[in-house]
Length: 279
Image (cartoon, rainbow, N blue to C red; front, side, top):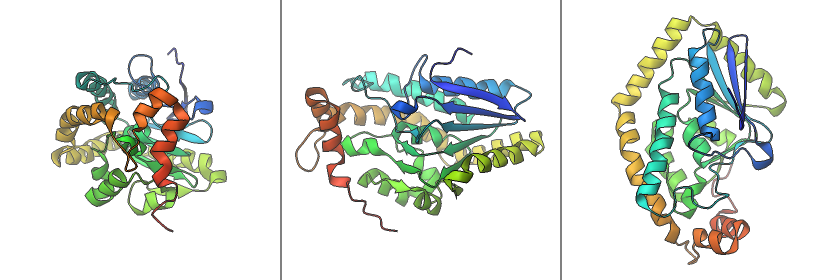
């Protein structure tokens, strides 16, 4: 594979995909030759490779991923159908992850925001390094992408994260069921490798079929309907985010266009600099 944004390695029955733009905090781009498409293509390659029995996705540097790229402005533009087409592509990529035969472990080694968290919710197991942080940061400026979160953390925590823009640390993520374990930084790589080896050592047929049964439960409880319905609603939410106002009257996305990234971040994050959750 000709890869620009990720690294791919297979050894001892485990395929590892590493998001590899650490200087930019591994931003998730979409569409042909994007980071997300390369992640999916690597996972599909692992699914087709008889030498692979488990996949790991992680990030290089201090972030898993800080979320979707906005370096060129709004990726879907300002038209609802423009956003719908973009989100349909995104949904199809994530659906390919969900429909894999072999399991995917998300090794969350730092920041995991927005589009990165949305993608990670289509993995099977999430393990967090002790300095990991999670959040739907795009809701702070009027965006969306919350549809799969209730299946992991329940409706109340999903609403809390969506309605407050709060960022949660690794310990809180474990408490609410978003990750299965939190691991010290100096042990993280070793513990992830050990978990992947354990999954790879299991009878492969049972792993494939038991994963399918549990994903079937998710579909019976609304996963498939959400996946079908969400791109249309999210397209509307994202298109109108251009004129979304913060409580102080500022419009972050207008500031992004007129004054640049720092003005946008200030408007987006000013009300949330002190976390509401304690301990």
